[in-house]
Amino acid sequence: SRYYYRCVDGHDGYISRIDYQRAKRDGSIGSSGKRKGEDKEKEKRRGRELTCRVCGEEIIIDVEKSKFSNMQMIRLQELPEDLPPGQLPYHIDVMLMHDLVDNARPGDRIILTGIVNVEKDLESSKMDVPLFRIRIEGNNIEFLASRDGKDVSARSDGRFVISEDDEREIKRLASRPDLYDMLISSFAPHIYGHEIIKEAILLQIVGSPQRELEDATKLRGDINILLVGDPGTAKSELLKYAARLAPRGLYTSGRGSTAAGLTAAVIRDKSGMMMLEAGAVVLGDQGLVCIDELDKMRAEDRSALHEVMEQQTCSVAKGGIVATLNARTSILAAANPILGKYDPYRNITENVNLPIPLLTRFDLIFAIMDEPSKEGDANLARHILGIHRRIGYEHLPPIPIDLLRKYLAYTKRFNPLLSKEAEDKIFEYYMQMRANASPDAMTITARQLEALIRLATARARLMLRNTVTAEDAERAIYIFNVMLNKVGVDVKTGKVDLGVLHGMPSSERSKMQLFLDVFNALSGKDQNPVEEQALVTELAKTGKFTEDEAREWIRKANAQGIIYEVRQGFYKRA
Image (cartoon, rainbow, N blue to C red; front, top):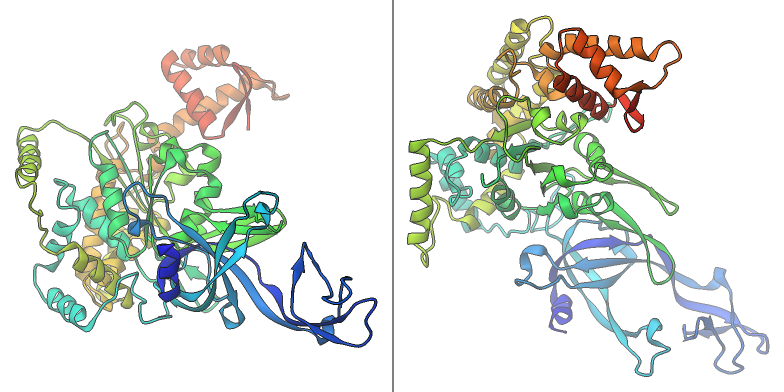
């Protein structure tokens, strides 16, 4: 009951479910069969019918003369970061009236003030001991986070109150010449190394403001990052720390997530009405959603992320409800290699069990490999031992975590624009990469150009500037080059080729054409199914494939949707 009484005075929570607007009778005017004239009746339910107090017959309501008010039901749930260990989150149904209707959306974090009402639970009417449920009639909503870039309340910087003293401390911090290094060192200080990844995640949390063109076209400002690496390389710890640090962060695991849990579910409430219940990406709107073990998700559930990552919306068409919800969120995901350990002699698409259309939607992909090194291993061991030696004492980062959270929330107030110098830097890099590309290799595309702009803008935001400088552009290019040198290199040629992210580097395009020529020859004009063993034999005869390579190419073509298995051991062109 303590939880419900807190709601009366104002309780933090997020809206996990929302109903459609309905009409509620404030006062009804009607008449019964045995009574003449008009009789004002207060709403009184006996079972499910409105009956007359005098004659007991059903009252016929005169709708035109009755008074109605707008009403909407929402479900308020405790914030994940406020939960004690091992406790499930409480939720409570809230009735909103009048001007509060349609004022909040799923995923909004609010402070609710209202009046507690106790109602009899209709489902317990058949029980010997009647049960009652508590419902709140809301009379004020204060938002904890800003929507659409506008301050909707005094507490619009995430869920943190930024006082005047905090603002002075943030500005004092921003004036330090070593600010950037301090920010990186303060992110997950218990994790040794990974400075570039920590820097990229900080830029992701800050993000770039969404741009809207004159024709209402919206340019995505959120940055998506994928971490692929060996077990024990702190991928999950980086995700959890980012979710805890972000002003609006959520963490989920791919193994226990479904498409409905990630996007939105349509459920039936106790009255039989269909309601929308928001999933992780909707609840994380204008925030950060961390998805661990992305490769463990089912393919049909994982496909729900395609629209979210590119269009930043979530479309639902179920149970008679057709809606498009905002999902303007950054995705930070982690995946394990197929073989358990990242193979540096294979391309990224061969190392991770993720579809190529999903891989291409990530702005940055980092491969984390556990490579033995005497100096590196010694430093890592000393770092871990040092943390345990100081157990009982707080391992203080350069910037305390509470101040860092407020700093990152404060950066959202800035809306940087590209300077001429920054624009020239990015333009020169793009043209140079395009000029250095061979006719078959793909070094950079317009999608990567937009990613560079987002990274440079996010860095300017992180430094509390409204102008993107040449230094910001250079740092964005450096981070992008680090990614290219790890996952954007064709292992067979040793050259940068973004075709590896599309599953088809230049070194394999000629082999793919040969593969298709052999397949089409065996299939014939009638497109008959091709037996796997016959295809392997014919490919080996060309001298370009071994039998093992031929089987690997069949698996790859099947995974990419070029061919499909009609029955066991037989394939046709898609």
